Image 1 (cartoon, rainbow, N blue to C red):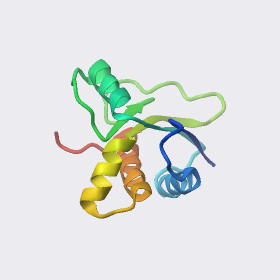
Image 2 (spheres, rainbow, N blue to C red):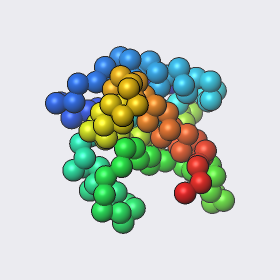
Image 3 (cartoon, helix red, strand yellow):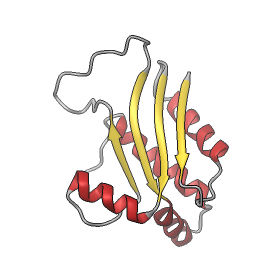
Image 4 (tube, one colour):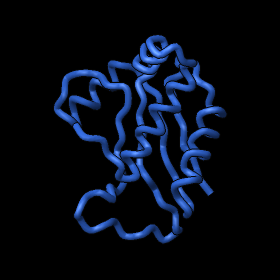
Length: 131
């Protein structure tokens, strides 16, 4: 079972059902245990604050991931939760960045949001791209 915790700033018109369904579909081919993930849709000002605070970059980006436990790191893993749920972490998407990218790529905004979330999920699963 995959649980998607989803929140968005109220003025960003995204299809919650479409996004949750896409996340469940994407994760169901990659994880086999009970899993929980948090998805948040925010604005550029908040994204810039997060980048500044956690990455020391004073700019906005399209997506950020905050893993509960990064399997690519050589540190000891977290202790398994007593309820057996794999808590992946948080994926945060900038709605204005998604709109701009969707426009440039001639895509629907919700489809671009899903694409960005999938990119963020890969980071939570320890799949990283070269910087």
